Length: 291
Image (tube, rainbow, N blue to C red):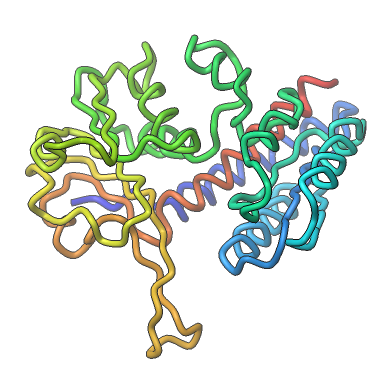
């Protein structure tokens, strides 16, 4: 079993991005500029956004954090998005999810300019990805394929089972793994809450990507010997023995599944750090396209 170490891989990619940024600025380009809108004070969201801000500093980006109260109206949030769309000093921005229940996430996604949508969620960018044309790839799936490539995981001709069909991870992941590229060229099965024979399908997977949001849902019974297992889930679970009062669990029961796997991601330290470097990659791409 080999660990797909997102922390080590992302650190290496950040160094590469920092060098690219230095060269870009030396040729007359300006610092890439990424902004994040954070609505409310969801603990996990605050942690993610702070990590993104720190990552920007590390690679030489400028970053802006727009903090808004969770009582903000949908109309006012859309107005803030329009300001960022029209800000010529900004290369890309994200709106941290989840949003308060009174705000329609799909309206927010649609409101972001495709040219600044470095999270890769806008339908225009999703469509370009589906056609295997240049675009901003959704950050988490992009991070996963970068990690598979860095570890030289064989994907061609393999059966990839994706558990979860969200627009953020599952659906785009299935598209990327099925495209005519490396990583890719898989036969892909996309499963979800209505899939009746989920365990049987998972056990046929050479590559199993789990993005459910259900802690330790996938046990050893779901995994065949030698499978590559990518755990996208991360859930805070109360744990009084920890200083923070909680611990983080993935969707895969790591201790059970790891011995059967050829490669596996840990939680934390697997997919999460790769999501952040993908966001940086997309922002650098946006900055270069505007020069």
